[in-house]
Image 1: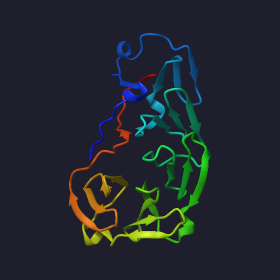
Image 2 (image 1 turned 180 degrees about the vertical axis):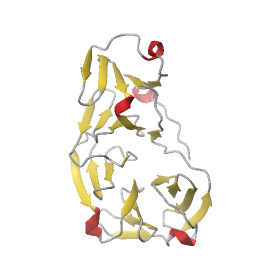
Image 3 (image 1 turned 90 degrees about the horizontal axis):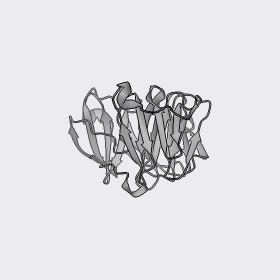
Length: 235
């Protein structure tokens, strides 16, 4: 399930440095933006203060996304950057499987915000309007539908763009007892429902059970924390 991450097509290189002052910074930054926590050394280099970073993602076009703890999302391409922020607070997760349709999931508010490739808001879905249970995790489907896990019904379902339920799995306790999913991954025509402490349950794209594994697969689009003190991006 792992995805090799390369930055060669956009000539974007990301370096993770240790916490020692000598290896992390050898020159003073020319400007600091206190709002979004990045230090610009030159037009070609960005240094990120990871104390404010929640997660870092890379899409299949090698664009880099930085999710900040205060709820701001910033995207860097080869030539420019974009940012998105609203007042709903912490973003529980983002899905960059489709670089032109990015999903932001606000679990506490039960909202999904869809952004375009410039991080402009396209739509917002109130999950309470679906008359389902509490949704604890989501993922983009293969044709831009959205897989969701209903914590109350303990089952996965696939929601179409017109908000119809296309697929639904049996309750997961049929397959694995005391399983508490917190993430969904869709990869190679498979859907993985993940409990970080127990492993994953695997389904096909029709919601049919395939199997269970105790390994916890990595997110193919995420650079997993913990991060070192500074992240350098050279463009």
